Length: 232
Image 1 (cartoon, one colour):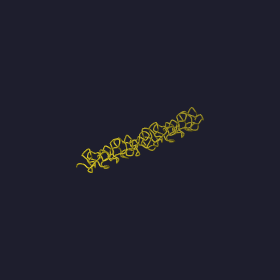
Image 2: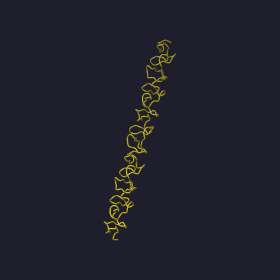
Image 3: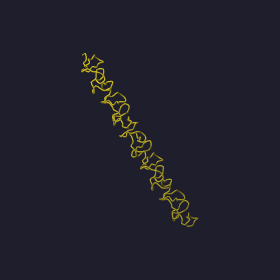
Image 4: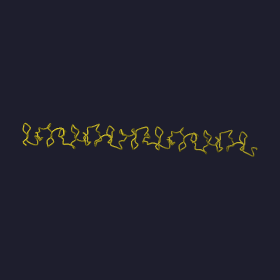
């Protein structure tokens, strides 16, 4: 069959004898896709499948040859998560795991790379307790221990940082005795010693501050002899 009757390649083989592209170059002369389009006419992957037949990355590698994201960029061109979504499509951690696969902080570091609170904020972004709860989620002391881990005063200072009463109020917030009981919990003298630690008069003055009778009434409340026995 002559060139006037059938399309013929540069090598003089016709379309009936070999598969030929639209440009009339045959499979022997150029790499051709399954659809018979050659590398000169369309972008073709290493496996010779073209962009019309399979999704192909910018680098011309197709989805059959390399893992490719929804946007058709492959693992060789962009960092891609285990789920094959790339850094251009979803926020991805330094370890290349994306927000769909693991919980990720605002800074894009995931729970596998850094300790993260229940609210997904990491230790680099907010102060976090040993239990990984952050200052936004629970009240936390200056030492970063939270109210769930240690007893904390109203001012958020914990028992490790300041002396705290049984009621969890600290020495900075209320006057506290040597035994760490505060004025709200027990009667305390002007010197901050409580009724449990020293004998205290009805007026809450202790034996260290004023002379007190055996009955614990002081010289301010009742007339007391030099021997500290009162008129009663």
